[in-house]
Length: 145
Ligand SMILES: Nc1ncnc2c1ncn2[C@@H]1O[C@H](COP(=O)(O)OP(=O)(O)OP(=O)(O)O)[C@@H](O)[C@H]1O
Ligand SMILES: [Mg+2]
Image (cartoon, rainbow, N blue to C red; front, side, top):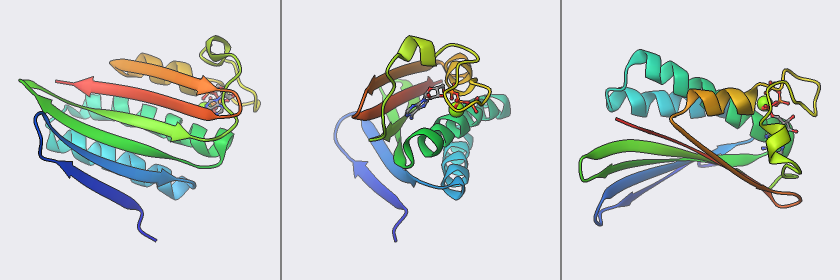
């Protein structure tokens, strides 16, 4: 089965997107590799790469642990002097009842460390989360130069 979907948009404000299906730990590795590759290509520092890849790991791992499956979409953009990218983590899992609580350091419903969401927010320049109980979760991180 095809693992990636690439699409190219040649309209104004060039953007390229890649979607990776996330359902296993191998997919987490692919997600990490894709983001590292892009950041390397965009000449982000090694420190920046490690910072963002750590968040990518946590957010894709959350998809597997808490929702079973989902996807990560990377959107690269280059608009009037602003170059960067966004990663969107989306699943149709159980959703999060109390987002403020889930964002708290140490809060976990699976007896784990509860550091994935709070850590990712700290690590990324931009972090936003939307979740609806019974519908799923959508988390977006953004980085720019
Ligand atoms: N994609 C998701 N779908 C549903 N619930 C989620 C999702 N991601 C996170 N959560 C909820 O938010 C809580 C906090 O997430 P966080 O990643 O911080 O901790 P954790 O996954 O429990 O533990 P850790 O990531 O430290 O191993 C989770 O325990 C879970 O209840
Ligand atoms: Mg987690």
